[in-house]
Image (cartoon, rainbow, N blue to C red; front, top):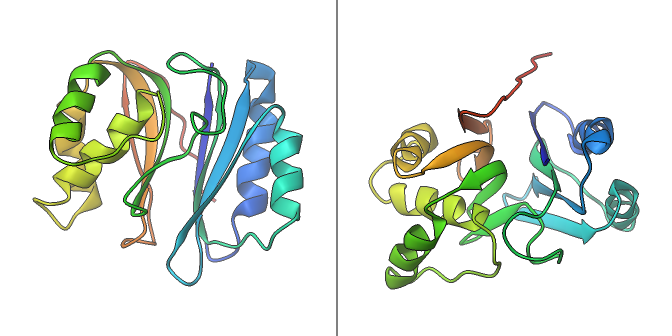
Length: 185
């Protein structure tokens, strides 16, 4: 079972995200990753197969900064155990998504999005969430509204956390038939 964490703070969130992932390790996983909105407005991402410690080591080799971020431990359901299939997934370096669950109709969504010019870099159902939200943002300036329109298209049980580099002060969460816990403080 996957684990997802998101954080928005007035300080660097890397430690918050990594501590969250460490607390979720007991659930089992095969890869882990983190996405951060850097102070310069660029989304960065680090993903690793294996243990959370491999991700921690990779992040310690670079200056990982960001006051908004999402993180994930993955248990593969669609696609093999590779860094390309590890979360977070991006769309146009604008949208970042982590997800637990299954989008049952991801193949048909993938075909629709491919016909609209989106390129897929993984074999996962999660990447369809990122591209669907990005597509819906063509109709609204609101990440929340784009997510609300997107989830109407998804069939399955899931929980997801989504961030938009053009809206750095928030993450949006959504769920359908899957538990999701939000903490403040």
